[in-house]
Structures are given as structure tokens and as C-alpha cells.
Image 1 (cartoon, rainbow, N blue to C red):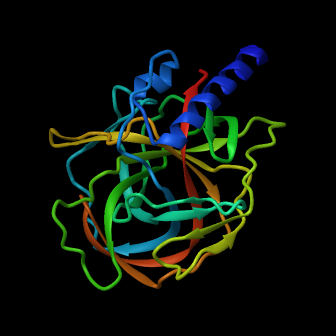
Image 2 (cartoon, helix red, strand yellow):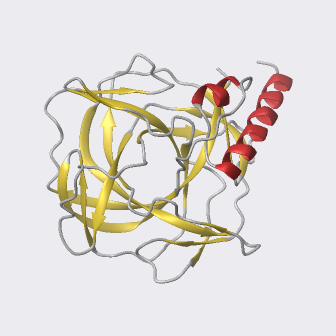
Length: 274
């Protein structure tokens, strides 16, 4: 594909991203096609700060789970393994003093390892508050479920998952050779593990792109809440952590032992080049 076309696509998606990230989100068709008027949506996606974990108590459904997203519109059935990440919504403080607040503090993510039959790979352009870059996607490796979290005991919430957050399927990503990556400034983060904002360094090179996903289990459909806003995840330096939390989602309730800070997942929009 000509470099000029890729550059034009990157400029187009960056313009869309600026509007989306400033106002929240719009419909999927408007963003993907880039040719339709955007319609405001009240549902926003927070930054998510993720930690490695070991979990005890989740029960993955024995029935096949079907995952449907823009990379796999016909869906695929993954093999789901252990929980490996717990993510908290996070407040971000910019060098200017500006604050990107948490809008849905109850909605966490619990991410499980997955494997699947080979899925299509893509070249995409992704834009967010750190800039924009083209990248290639690998095979799906994580399924993230909206989850309640408690520091003191099982959440025992109804419904089983918090409202206002999609399921996500995550794909490892690589930047093309010679690409400089994103340009994250020095920032501060605060989540429910930290008493105050903590200074962190965010890698220029992302490691995972997470797509909003429709999940179907035994004929029951759990739709995307916001089909536009993705999460692009970057390695991040250490932040405070709690030794243990309790997570609840559609796979049940688990005691979750928190390990180390792993990634900051940033609300983003994407454009498929091929």
C-alpha cells in the first residue's frame, strides 16, 4: 500500500480521534468509515491500569464462548485459561496540570489468557492522547471481562458485572520497522490502590490492542457497550498495589492476589488499513 495512502489514513483517524477523545465516543460506523456524521454517546471508556495476578475461584463456562468483534465479524470460539491481569480505572494527570478523570469507578477488568484457531491479522492505525501510529496485530491472547472489585470481601453484586463497560479481546501488536512509536509525556496516575497520584513513565511502544467485543454464551448475548473506543496498552513503571482483592464477573467470584504493575491501557480509536 502506498505510503501516501497510509499517511492520509493516519491523518484522518487522528482527526477523528481528537474529536472522540475530547467528547467521549461516537457510533462505530461513523468512526470506521470516516464518512458519516458522528452521534454523541454518553458512554465513555476510562484509562485502565493493569496488574499481574494469580486468581482462585473463577469458573470459566464449560459451554463454548463466541467472541465477535471487528477483526472477527463472524466470531471465534477461544479456549479460555487462567486470569492473568486485574485492571483498575485510573485518573491521569498531565504535565500541564490537566486531569483526565475516572468516569466509571466501579468498572474494572479481569483479563484471562485465551488461545484460538488462527484469526486474521491486520495493519491498523491507532490514535489516542499519546499520538498515533501504525501497527500490525497478532493472534488474540486475552479476554477481558467487566468486573466488580472489593478490597474487603466478595462483592456479591447484581448484576454479575458492572454496567457501562464492554468486554474486550486483546491482540499483541508490533510497530513496523523504523517506526518511532507514540510520545507519552511524563504523567501521574491514581487508581484505588494509590492514596495520591504517582509519577510514572509510559513506554513509547504499545504491546496490546484491545477491541470491544460481543460475547455470546449459550445463546445469551452480551453486546458491546461502546463499539468505538478501544484500549491500547503500554508497559508502565511501578505504582502502589494491594496484596489481595476480590473480583466478581460473569465467570464468578475469585480471590485475586496482585503481583506487579503491568500496563496502562489508554482509550483509543483505530482504523483498519488492511
